[in-house]
Length: 359
Ligand SMILES: NC(=O)C[C@H](N)C(=O)O
Image (cartoon, rainbow, N blue to C red; front, side, top):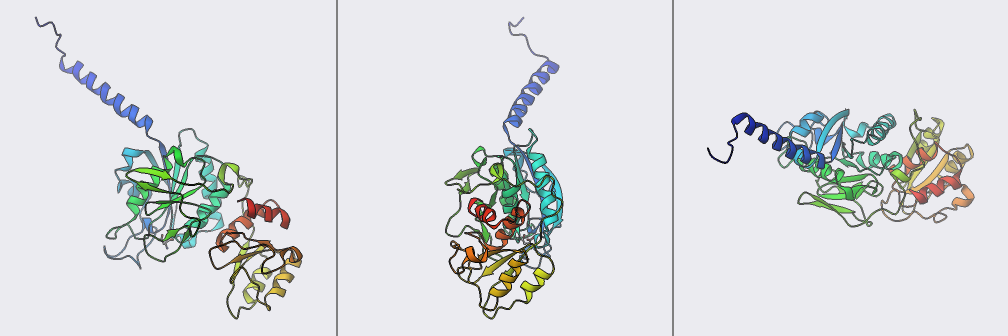
């Protein structure tokens, strides 16, 4: 009788099955648990043909289909999908933001969630990202991702963007860096990224201050981090907020008048962002209307339509005397978000100016 006891099939099967379970089980435990929250956008869009890259329909593909289109996701993370909304992001509202922000905080408080990816339209992606940067109460990675081409297009950018976003959300190096935006193999901060092109895949840039990292070869590489407060460090809390204060933006241009400004104030805007020309300059015929609005209790933030550089307090206007707030380097659409959240805590201009120098 051979000294080696031969294994009969049932025992052999049991040994192999146990080994397989151990390998996949252990491996699954080492893979991060990443939630994918889908909101719509072009990443979920479909076009009439493979060459349709404009004039397609956004927000038609569901989250499970987005995940199924990238089977490689299963190799880098344990992903689960949740369809929070299904909209083109030009239709994003404050109510959507509050729902999304509360859902993100609930999920991140769970021990079995290591990071979150949010698929989103690119039109307002930078705004949702910054809103979350100010209200998420966690160090865990939150990564927003979109696409400039619909899922049906030749060289659709969505699938690889989604794969990369999940890599970043599952990366320990991404923790504590605030809400991030990952498209086109690049990683940007929510505070400083902006959409710079109407249609090309390299649309998301961080002018002057620069991106914070890359995704290459299935790994996230970071080179810098924001110096401003965010997420775990935020003083803003939306847990018990049902609605955000109304803040509107007036756009500066040659021959500007006060029709829009007056209408916003009459409609009860609690704050106005003046997206001025240059360094936030105030046209002679608009300045009195801004002063009058301030006297009625509307907060006024001087921002710039230029998109880069510091908007200096007491530069093109005497903010101390006018009791206005300077937007620092925030673009008008992000200044609006910070002012809305600031108004949930205070209407004191000095306090709000501190917030603009903090976040
Ligand atoms: N590329 C895109 O996602 C554009 C689309 N209009 C959106 O923002 O939903």
